[in-house]
Image 1 (tube, rainbow, N blue to C red):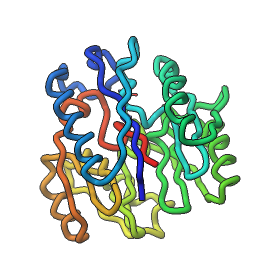
Image 2: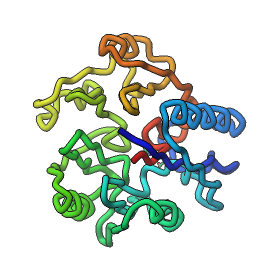
Image 3: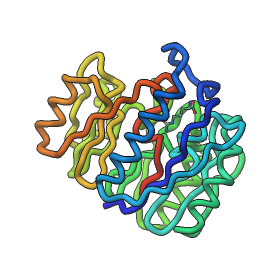
Length: 252
Ligand code: CIR
């Protein structure tokens, strides 16, 4: 169960962040509204949410998940794969140091939190354009020291591992068709995102409830079949910047 979340309000310059989407320029006003609804959803599920201020000159800084990996006993500060995002880490470190001892990923390692999928005691670490083998291995040593097992997973398509596969609790993963067939995920029950609904794979489990992006009816029906409460959130503006529900918070 999660008790805390750290989020950051998007800055007015958030549209200057890195993106591969080509979905057009995002609206700041709409992003603020959608971010507010996200924070309210977390609070309604019992989380104490700490809201950080926008970080000047870091338009992707509200995607706080990429700057750290938080386990029950440790916060590992990352070394984000995109150089432009490395300046986000010190302010996340300051916020997390109030809750956990900290460790860090060191050069030449790179790691984005979006590549780290915790499935109970086992952790999948995506090797992507942002996370390299060295970064994954460094994180792996921290995880092993705390009793987790872990394994690397090649991220063939998409920005991060969690762009394509997420933990729904109870041994269930939600995955795009491309991720669903990968051997590391065979031991799990897999719910496949509906064709044409890959973005819905970025669904977030919070204390037995599923937060899922609005507008993906086929996948939504499959989530309803799991018998958990499902809450849809409009993610149109974060999506334009390659972001999703998982990357907007650090949960612990
Ligand atoms: C980036 O490219 O780094 C940001 N525009 C999006 C980061 C999304 N993070 C995530 O999925 N964990």
